[in-house]
Amino acid sequence: MALFFWLGAASCSRDTENAGQPLPEAKKAPQAQVQPQKQNQDQKLIYDYFPLPEGVKIDGYTAAETAAKATGGKAVMALSLNEDKTYYYSILVRMPEDKWMKVIVNAADGKIMKKIPSKICSNLEHKIFIDHFADLFRDGQRFPEIVMKSSKFKPGEVVADVGCGSGYFTFPIAREVGPKGRVYGVDIDDDAIQIMKERLAEKSCFGDRYKNVEIVKSQIYDICLPENSIATAFICDCELIHEKTGDGDKCFESIAKALKPGGRLIMLSFIDYQLEVMGFKSEKENREHFEKKLKPLGLELIEAGNPLPNPNNFFYIFKKTVK
Image (cartoon, rainbow, N blue to C red):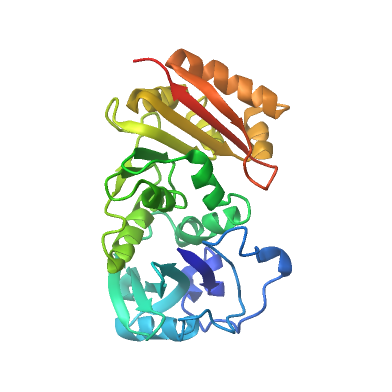
């Protein structure tokens, strides 16, 4: 569970030659970048680390130095996290011969918990965006606690997080469905798949809490799950399906086939971006478009609205009514 992020300036550029250079002194983040804790208890972007959260005795600079010294590499970036009341740092280190590694450092005592081989699939900037910034952009916009409550996942349920990215919703869903449930983190992006693998390895330091997560590399028109295998398909930013596939028809057909009878398709997205991508003028036009597209697939709209405090969202639930 991410509590705050600590980033080196070199991580924000395509130029990786300067990665691992001395990090700038901490500066207080502009007010607009810091979301109130009540908006999202999972994540908070800060640059001023003092006072450190209770239980954290090692700051990000010290953790990065520990990781670099232990590996002989250069620390590019550090992410501070909290999993099951344990604070730790995930340090991305550039190794000799342009190899990469994530080093997990306990924030309480500074000891290394695990070294995880990492990989930059496309480029460093893309990896960093998916691994960290993509989640930060959602902070204060997505309210995962409210999304989980509104989605009404049940213990033991089998869910597909379609377009899971770095697992922003995958891991909260995994906690909701519990050890008897299963969550498929589905994505077509190689960086996202690699990051999910690294995060699962990272979280294994804290027990078997996420053994119910399985990563699935999908195809552009196929989520690659068996027919009638899932109770719920969850899609955040569903306009991306349209962007990547042209119209999304085949992808939605794949989702409908994977859903069990009575299964649900939950869709969440920003209204303004969705309207821009789809060329619609209103949320009503957007909703009617999906109703028309999904009804022939046996999916009927049973709920439409926006339970989130941010008005720039829509939240649809469709139900599979055919056998």
